[in-house]
Image 1 (cartoon, rainbow, N blue to C red):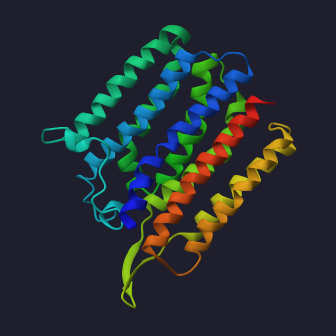
Image 2 (cartoon, rainbow, N blue to C red; image 1 turned 45 degrees about the vertical axis):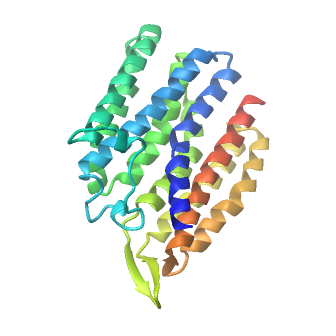
Image 3 (cartoon, rainbow, N blue to C red; image 1 turned 90 degrees about the horizontal axis):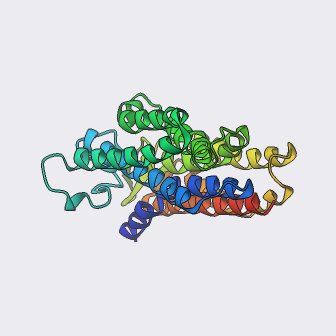
Amino acid sequence: MRDQAIRQIKYLLFSASIVPALFSGALAYRNNTFDLLDFILLFLALFIGQMGGDYLYYHFTKNHTFTDDAHTKIFKGWKPLFIDQIKGLNPGLVAGAVCIVIDFFIGLYFFDKLGIQVLVPAIIGLIFMTLFTPLMKLGLKELVVFLTFGPLCLVSGYFALSGIFDFYAFYLSFPLGFLVTVVAYLKGAKFNIKTINGQQKVVKLNKPLVYALSLLTYLSIALLVYVQVLDTRAIFCFITLPLALSVVRVIKDQTSDIEAYLWATVRSILNLLITGILLALIIIYT
């Protein structure tokens, strides 16, 4: 069951790039600037960018052997997709470089279409991708994840599809950013594992952070409805609140069973995916 949960987390984590792409496409569709080729290229750019970040993180943590890395604990043995098929001494570095090159060529397409302005989000994204590991070591992981998969992805994604930098996209990025940061924290939290009464437990989680991010997700949706950035139908997104509460219930005690913790992480990703899709549909049909 533990391996099954880890496998699901591994694939579902790509929701972090898929949902911003869907958001951007929804905004473009609503404002009559949607182009299928542009959307496909944006989708690939965000997806490949996330993969590239994973490969470089794998390389710079010496194949996930750093003692303060969650991958040495309950995610032990975790490897990025396709890494075993890449031969050589530094497969993570090679794969990360290939992802950067592919995104570079996609960037050239948008540069030709939109001009020099496209370089700003592209350069910021590249900086976050390459410097993620040192920033993580400085304790800035959650902030970087929030900024990258929230405002940066959504604002730059909508710009790629419309040619417009829009505060509307910036405002909409907040609930998305909070949701993805919950996922990032649960997967990469700095915790200890201890055996208590014959069972392995997760201890020393930053529970207030998860509580705050979960609360801010739904408060931000309510606030965006109140200030009329979102249609009132966005309140339907609160149907995912039980998913968020189920995650909080698992980690509320001083210790958490490892298997329960892993499935709570799965539910946090499902919350990101479902809430993101609901918001995208609401954006399209309002």
